[in-house]
Image 1 (tube, rainbow, N blue to C red):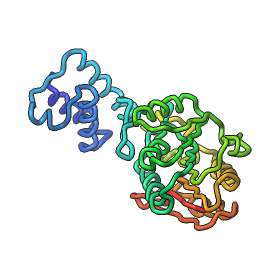
Image 2: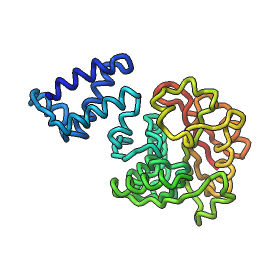
Image 3: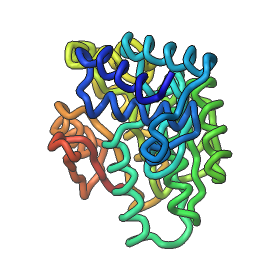
Image 4: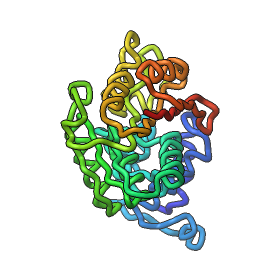
Length: 286
């Protein structure tokens, strides 16, 4: 079958679920993953074909897209902060908003602390925050914690792929009494912990709700700031003087998160909106 014919098939089959631009982006991601070709290659050779085995692979991908499986899980990869990352059902798919959090940390660190830094990423998942910081702040010593052994296995592979050293630790942050257990104090602690309340499930698209790990997404409605409270407590003990704590947050709980940080004695607190205009991240100082 001609690839351009299959592209037309995808546009027709998926039009009731996705818009045309998104379907085209799926097609070209699959083209690169399955055929090793880019958009320009197909433009220069519009009669490019797929063989029978490749057709089975493409048909399988189309079936999964019809079931709203994320394209990143289908191809097993995504890009974050300009770097390649492997992802699977044990890790969340990194979001553009989290790139903004990384950019905030990188910009502040280069400006105010150009020397060596010790950074801790709590709830690292596929490692996107920790690895991006290690790559862009080469003088930093980066640590990353996650409760999931399977997520850490993915993160370690991503660190190898991106040629950076990150000290990965399996631990349940809710059960750690003191970060000194990790044998160091930190200049920066950052976390994108679970923060979606169950009451917000109606807002979550099926491709997220049915495929991404709920362990990394949801918290109980009755204690939505559970992770923020625990991490703030630990950060208060284990940040160096003037050390910084960065959070990605629930857009509906910006005020409450700032109040929590102030309760734990943090100052210079700042609430920042993401590219979509939602309250999405905080920075505070010990």
